[in-house]
Amino acid sequence: MLWEVGGYVSDKLKRSAWGDGVVRMLAEYIHTKSPKAKGWSYRTIYKMVQFYDTYSSESFRNVVNHYGMQNFLLGKGQSELPTKEDAIVPIQMAQLQEDEFVPIESAQIPPVLFSTGWSNHQLIMSQCRTDEQRLFYMLYAGREQLEYKELQRALKTDTMSSLLGSRDVQSEMMKRQYPQSGVLFKDTIYLEMFGLPVKHKESKLRKEIIAHMKDFILEMGKDFLFIDEEHRVTVGSKTFKVDLLFYHRLLQCMVAIELKTTEFHPKDLGQLEFYLEALDQEERRSNENPSIGIILCKEADMEVVRFALNRSMSPTMVALYKEQLQVGSVIQRSLVEFCKFLKK
Image (cartoon, rainbow, N blue to C red; front, side):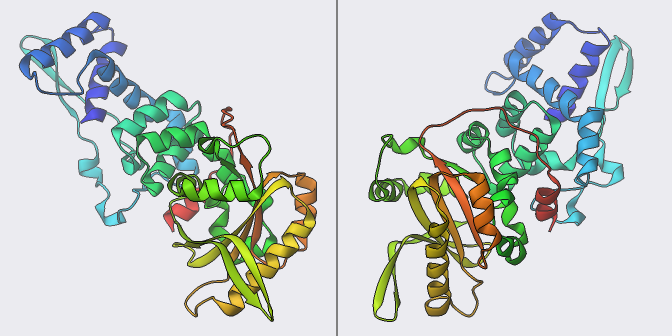
């Protein structure tokens, strides 16, 4: 309905049949006829026009086709896609004269738009600058089932570049064992909600994460389930502690997170791999996959990270955490892997 109304008004405006004043009159007319009807204000009608114009454009169609998402309907089978006969529902009639009516045919609505709801679409249209960004965030919002405020945070924290760029900080074993990890794990986590001081200890960071676990998991990704803090693993006669232990539902494996409030050091990776080996040998169940290790540190020299990960024989990665939210422009990244992952 939003698509058809947007197409109808857009056509009237483009052919100069209507002006701004007529759209205002339309909003007032609807309010007069249906006082209880919500969502039909002057501004909202123009958002419908923007919705239609943005996603019926040739540039957006080209992006959708480029990534093979032209027939994609998130969470539904291909059999539920609209057929050619019923996919285009024409605007009923447009009055030219009192006794003369002609049908106006709107462009076909891309099925991918059904990935998320109207409120999220309004946010995406106002915050995203490119069609690639718009496609990513509607797909991401659909997969993660993001509500308005959650999507708003994803946009502010530049989830697109953080997620699609994460393969640069993953070991070869991580990429090989979990090919989809590049679109599941972020390389930067924002923890501004903790109110951490500039200088803080690992114990302080861990306590704040435990106290704000819901926010932390939402930032990491909804597939994470918390298991334990300072999780004890015994090897021989010695006991070691894993800072945070999670379980990832989709990958069906344990995820060990080591916290570092200093700059990444190669020795940190050796410690993490030791923990992963202990977890896999002592605690991993027969139906679970090899454990994943994440070093969450305050700073890192990416060249040092690259050298260290090149020799890592375990599924590991290095991610950064930021105490303050740094809003920046979303950079364009390849959506190929993300789209392939969703289609699977």
